[in-house]
Image (cartoon, rainbow, N blue to C red; front, side, top):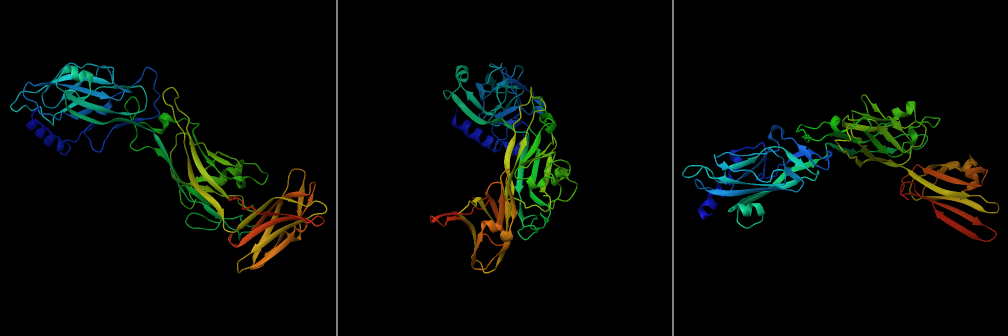
Length: 467
């Protein structure tokens, strides 16, 4: 190859894409533009044929070399080992060059001769393209590149490598992508300590939250754009790959979606829903199943086009602090031909509280001991508090006079556990303290003392959701 031929080929290839837009996959494309197939395609052991509809699988490359009339060189096109040229594939050029018999069909590498067309100079030059048409066979959905090489001798083309290679180019050819995507934009809500009872309503925050309903995020589940192809060469749809049992599951605390009798049927299902508007208005899509820790939407192959995930807890019950995440559980519409993978979890928003929550996980009032709760307020404003008791099975608790009150500004309040609650069954339980004040100002301590022995045990109260 002469220096003049190299210079001419480089100049012509440099302007190739300004003059010719290609629908096929061109190895010289920058950026790379591989053809995209659905990653859900199930590939048999013997391989899967991809049909070349609308020339989407045509593999094109410029020769990158200027031929003389009648000059013969040899081409090798080699793809990743999982991509094979199916029997019946053919090669064409756009310059009148002669293409010899194709060797290697059924494998991932083909070779053939190419002869410069008549003319002085020959029209077979650096801008001349060769196109490999036909179907392809894949043995996996790993995707892959292909490499073109132009060689002096047929044996060199058969062997591949660098010996005798005049021109070469590598580019992305086939890629595989999931047919569907899931994204979420977290929003979240704040349970308001000033509500009655505390934390039973949200802090109103237009445009997403009212006092009764909070948005946990905006969810989009959709067909990938542009849609990947399936084996027959047509574009995939959600219904192609997803069966009716596919669903979205939201993990998080939905205990307050329950009805007053503790069940999660009927009205409870309307308390967790998708809505078309940011403020949770519009025609809702109610959850199919709700439990204390999850909500499920049986959407099948239906898209979720940027809907708000909304939660409207039953009124009168304190709303717990919680984080939320969404998973799309994919079930194949046709397991023999499509193997689908679930997506997520993706993070949604969270529910927080704007006051202070403290907990003594285990308080005891054994005979002969003093049991106390100590609340401290370092702020300049007195803060009201409420203490509720939880008990184990077989034990009950009745609120006492100290179950509600006020923690003085810049002060400390020492409360006897027996004044907070009276336990029957076992003399023990859990105390939950809610203070209508900033969490940085409020601290809590549980103390148990044996006056006879002088034994003292102090435990800093935990902050649910952060300890």
